[in-house]
Length: 84
Image: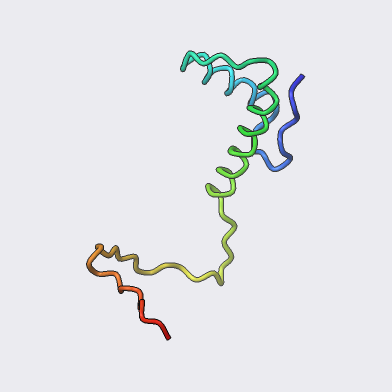
């Protein structure tokens, strides 16, 4: 018997179990019956987190990042280590 996935998960319990079984088989990693509920819960949580990142709910008035510029280690400001 497996723990039911989080209600926020985009996958059904059956889909989660199938993903876990396929990944375990592909990697040659056995999942002990006593560990299965925890694996299902962790996978469900990860799937729910991924779904939130994949489909952000943006509104029309949300500001966009118009410019993204990387900086190198020498470009970053140094912290002020003086005691005050």
